[in-house]
Structures are given as C-alpha cells and as structure tokens.
Length: 417
Image (tube, rainbow, N blue to C red; front, side, top):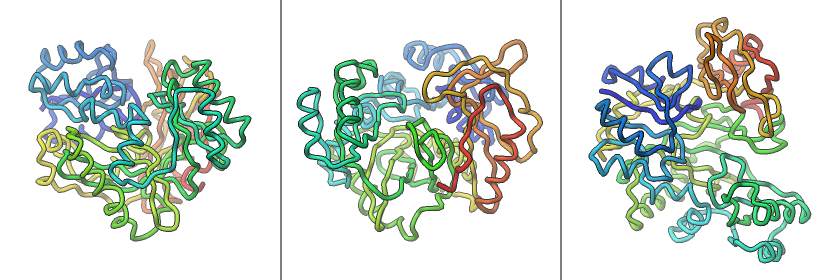
C-alpha cells in the first residue's frame, strides 16, 4: 500500500515512522515532509494548503491512503475533496474539523451535548468584551476563535492584562483574523491532560495517556508554546479515570457526532483539566497532538496502518489496538527566542552521535548542502523508551547534551512539573 502523509513537523515524522513498521506499507510519501521523513520515505515539494495539488498527487501516484497531519488542510476541506473522488483519507471532513477551527463552535457543541467545560462568553466587540470581564475572576483565559498556530490562548492575571490582550486581538488584529472573535473563559484549576482517541464516527478507542508541557519555561511559567515536551503515561493521572472519561466525555461526544451528522474519521484530541476525579474539556483538536504523538505512537504495539485504514473504512471495531507498558519521554529542542522571534539556518550537529536507543524526530529542520539546519521554532524531538520515567528522562537529557545548534533551548523539567 502507498501512503501519503501531509505535513512537515515532528508529528508527521512520528506518524511516518510508525507507518514504516507496517509490512502492508510499501511506499511512504510526504508533502512537504522534512529531512527525517526523507530517511524513511520520499518527500515532495508542495504546500499543505494546495488542496488541488495534493489531489492531483494522490491520483498521479495511486496513493491508497492519505493521512492528514495539520489542522489547516482539514479545516480547509482536504478530506472532503479527496473523498469526493473516492480516495481513502485519515482525517475528519471540514464540518467536523470546525471543532478545532472555531472555539465558539466547539464550546457550543459542548454545551448542547452536555460535555463538561469552563463557563464562557463569546464576542466580536472590544467594549462588550471588556464589560464581560466583570463576570469572571482572575486569572481569566482569553481565546482567539480561529486557528492561531498555538498562540491564540492567553491566560491573563489582571484586568489590565485582559484588556490589553483583547485590544491586541480585536482591534490591532495581531492574529491575522483568528482573533476577530474571542472567547472569555473561566480559568480552570487542576492538572492538564491530553486524551487522544481514534474514531471512525461509530467506534472510539482511547490511546494511552500523555502529559504535555506547553509553557516555555521550567515550572510551567511563561508564554504558551506548541509544546516543549511530553511523557507517556501521564504521571499525574489519577487512577480509575477511564470510566469517568468514558461516561462524562467520550460517550456524549460520540452521541454529539451522530446528532450533528458529523463525518468524523481520524483522531480526536481532547485537552482536559482534571480536578477531584472530575474532568472538563479545555479544547478539541481534530488531529494528532504535537508533541504528544511522538510519545504515544512509540508505545503502539498494533499496526498503525491497519488502524488508520479501518478508521477510513469505518471498521475500527474490527481492529485490536494494543499498547506497550513502557514509558516514553519526548524532549523538544527549540530555537532561542521561541515562541517569539528566532533565527533559522543554524547548523545542527551530533544527530548521528546519540545512543542507539534514542529516536530523534525532525520538527523544524531542512537539509542544505549535506547539512541539517534549523528551520523552525521547535527544531527536534528527542525521544526514548524505558521501564520508568526516571530512565527515559535520563536518556533524553543525555542526548540533549550531544545534539547541538546555536541558540538551542529546552526545558529541564519535562515529566516533573
């Protein structure tokens, strides 16, 4: 079978790596891919937003399954376009992808289907938003309604911070239209947890737990990022939460898909806040999380292609999904200055000098004249498997001292905070 992976990040490298283990997969292609994916497949120039170009590629290369990594092409309707021409796709259609594409749509979905979430107000008006702040205590969460590349959620500690953030989004337009509508949301306490599930719209299968570390600095302080590292299993997850999550979150979610006629075949990523053995949904993402995927898929004992093919064909209930009991840690090496401005084009050294049991996924890299260079904010994902959290942390931090580039930055407390 020929598989096409759409995307260029660490998530897509991890997906391609897992697919490469399947004896059913004969060819892996990627648009546009990255140097890591190029080591196990063939990368092709192109944009994830060029839907017609991707469709032509699928037809020219007789691709059997297209796996859509990022949220943007999903929200643009890539799955709809391909499926209209009878091409198999792993990824939800455009209407279902609105669960990530619009925070207001997502909150309305949760309220209508009795899925626990934070109290909120939505508005497009700056003055109205400032008045609505009186309904909340601090800190308060302000979210841009649209896609904002992980930069659309701001936790404000005071009214001054909140009004400044609202001005930046609603008046100054710093998020290129993503913040033309905002959600004011109550700040939830507890601990954050990522729950990823495979679903074909009829059956939902939770993956193993993961803990993401979103803020840039140790101790979970500073601006939010796309994620500075993950561990799986989540060491903070209370015992016996599976039944609570099924009853309170997954069952009403699946019921909501059916009632709203959503064609959802892919991954649903549910961001949760858990406190006192109760869970509330922070957000829905309609694709694999990044860098949660890097930890989770390294624990998958089943054939990922079998699972994805079944999801695309709505036969997920027929496929066993099995997981390893091992622990995994994923450490992000970032460019200095991220998530603000940063320089690209720094030479990366030491990639071939790490221990054999280290897996390095490329996130923001490019190859030039035989050298691997930095090409993004989050550059590399260093991953390791082992029998416990201490072992895998020790492995990835040892590797972090071997791989180097100018301005390299990483958190020191992944798995602990």
